[in-house]
Image (cartoon, rainbow, N blue to C red; front, side, top):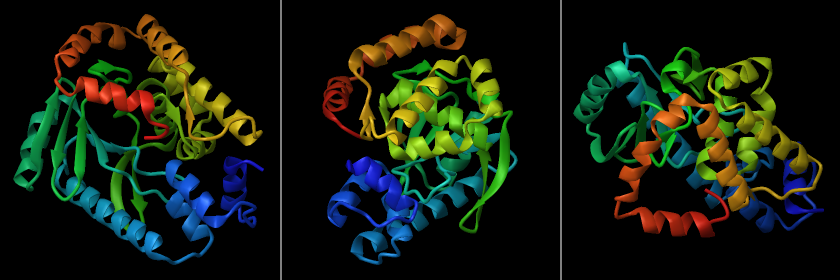
Length: 282
């Protein structure tokens, strides 16, 4: 039995067939390690570190939520159908109030580290990415203004947050995996399989991201059938094809394509490209 199939079964409550450490390492690559440790009821140093990190990130998100009260915003890639420790916090902010949002966040102690045309990275005990539009190399792949029409209040382990609705999160997750990261993890799989229903396809159609959602569901099916190991890294030609198709179909992507030229002048670009070509997860 391959590691991915064994991991899926373990998350269903079945006894693992592979050595536990190998399974935990695979779970970490797939960003489902905390969920696995909780399902196995295993308390160790790794579990304690993950639980501490999750509490820290949720505390950070709560502070951001309070700072942005009254502004049109929503967290993305944070609320999941399984326990998850994000590497950073991503928040989508209405383009008409992004200046006020940045002022409030900096007043809270966040320091601006990187500013780009449609996003900014701030730091304070953790990383906060503020988006007007989700983008890759400054090219918009989802219209943030349209996403913000699909928000709700949720409670994540006692912390009330404004997030995009579950079906919108499925679209965001699929688009992020296919267009930006070109890697599909089990974490992505559970979001898409759990939340990609009719409403998700309707929103994906509006955002010209149907192909990403279809691709994600196909990958999920192949993973469940044991035909693919996750994380699955899209071959370069398929990644380029997906981006080219997005540009052809989506006016928002097409109109921001020139912004990619600004990214080409970024001195960090070469390092980023090398890292993306060699990595196996994100």
